[in-house]
Length: 342
Image (cartoon, rainbow, N blue to C red; front, top):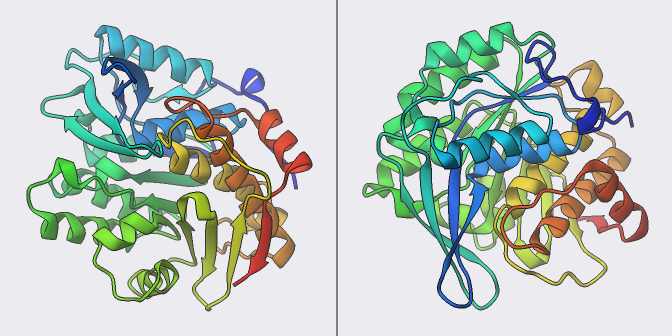
């Protein structure tokens, strides 16, 4: 395994980025025990972007950020993670907001404020151009709010173009039904994006919202693979761990062997996906042919353990606080998840 550089060594020029991410950047307004709203930098794609940068992956964020106070905070956090901005100059539109409620187990629910906001000031042509200028770009990733039907005219042509250009396409379903009024159109838009992916990620909740057939989340995930050309599907199961499935029917389940004290689950799936991609791109076979995604059993076990550790470290803090690469490596070395075929 060859891991990327640490964030302090990462280039801030987007001419040398391995991964480009596109999608929402917003402020999570998280309710505390006294009912007060605590602002935390967030948004699934933004969380993924920061998590990649903090684990040393050369990463380019494609969406613009606002000139307002929250936008400058988002820009500072992304800069500190070693991530390059395709739009370094801020735009006048306001920052998106998400009001986050937590249940007794720390599981998050969301309501969104997304009209006329900064991160939606993008076009398919603009995304294509930025990717063309990113020399060495191997992977593009998106998901969550970028998959709503209203924005499919932006992101779907971009995904199709990036797949045609030979880049590894990663799509995280990460459904947020609170943002839409037409669930059928939302499902269709999500599935259209997943149909461009080499690697798809979904949670058990996502699969239920997509109304896929199957008695268990694993059955639903297997069905999802039949609806896409993807080689792999990553299925997250909350406290039950995660599964990585190959379209040929093979699957591996990973679960923590040590207790994890959960503060909240905000950003857990995003950090999981970042860890998965960092470990995946460190595999020698993937470095030689990224879109083939040919992994040995040992590589699958390592990739899953790294991804699960990344998520477990996140959930132990309030809001999305992605771990850096040394911290993830330390957890994998001292308390690795148990991985086995399923």
